[in-house]
Image (tube, rainbow, N blue to C red):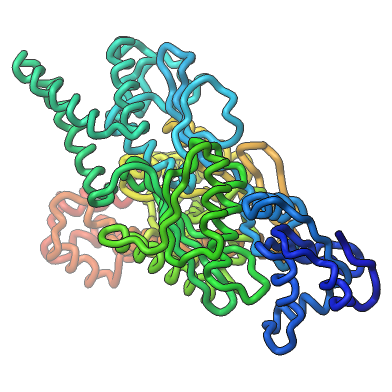
Length: 613
């Protein structure tokens, strides 16, 4: 059913023809574009509510003023209406609907099954490879944290297959105790298979069984006097128990998602905690696009429908959702998600005990994140969003690092590392590296040393991995970064070089993407470019400051300190006699002998050091 198109919408005539049955409606503007898609148990009552004078919110009235046509589709049930509404919102993305703007694929942990020594890896996209996929995880960072933990505990390889096949000696991961080096036969296939099986148990949610099995194996090894194996199993047990203490919800088991919504200043934030087998995999903030005066329940319902019906597999939908506000059509939403899952899904809005505490935690997090977004909406956060769009990233980058090198003709070389998050510079995480043992002026070697030192520490868990690594330099510097991260088997960090461009002017920077080898020049007014310039300039400032401090300290140190037998007293007499180090350096041997406390032999030693080639 639809109205006739006209310059002014005749809602009175239209409402006379509308049924009281459930269904969906589409509001169209003068050009036929869809402004809004809605559903209703009773179409006539719902649509009539839009045209009651004095009861419609200002934003809603503004939308109604643009409406020239309404199309209605009758359905048999509310669930059919909800599913049809979801499909139309996904198809048309109407400007006045609540839009999640989250069409990315979710990250998983992938374990290969068609290899003698299976690889554990980050995965996003189609599940076309043979093996098992564990997840979904809320973000790439959550996957990285899990992979880092598993690498420390079970030491299953995470390197690329091409890297694995071409090894002739153990890599750095083996040297720091993160891999058993199956590439060169340091572990038997049977031992490796056991590590893989334990990894699968952990990722599959069988941690309790895994802990019991490891404890039994540790006891048997101790009885057999195999103390080295017993110690390894003990360390695995301790790490798993520590993780369990941090990540497990008290008194909970099974799969559930905890969802809380907050609305402030016309903006909405939905916080989602992912819990699988009673273990928190992580959390994520969503900021749905709202243009009408929606209530929290409206935003929650739109989020739940779009999130769980928007591409998640049946195995990725949990059995229960905990929310902070009751939904108007809770049963219909439950049924729709249950159809997608293939089993019943329960939605609870008033949990008690520990569950209520976790809902409150999600709500508090949503409130804090929303306040931060409001405070930074026009500045830093928008720049990160622009960077995400410019680089076509699946999700918003949360952490950026940038490196730069500074020296004076090779003297006192210093490398800087600056860190930005969505709030701006994170100065507590800045680092300087004094570069030693390289050919003076070799910027490539300096960059390689700085990156090696920095990312070796990050691999040991002494900090957080960035989402994007910026290098102030061209292809040569980018190559150094790629080589360092490949050697350390870090493949989840995007590397981008910031070259000055042909004209070497601000605003003409060329971005070099290491993953694709492509070059990109952003418009001068791009917020993404402004963010990149900011972090590049900050890295340069920090490097120059560090270099000057190191150079000045070196130059303040008198050359006389390096001469054996010249202590503070003799040094003071020399400087006072000649008026400074330059006078000492130009003094003849006879002049040096006239200084109190300086013998002929000592004068010859001083002269020889100061005039050595």
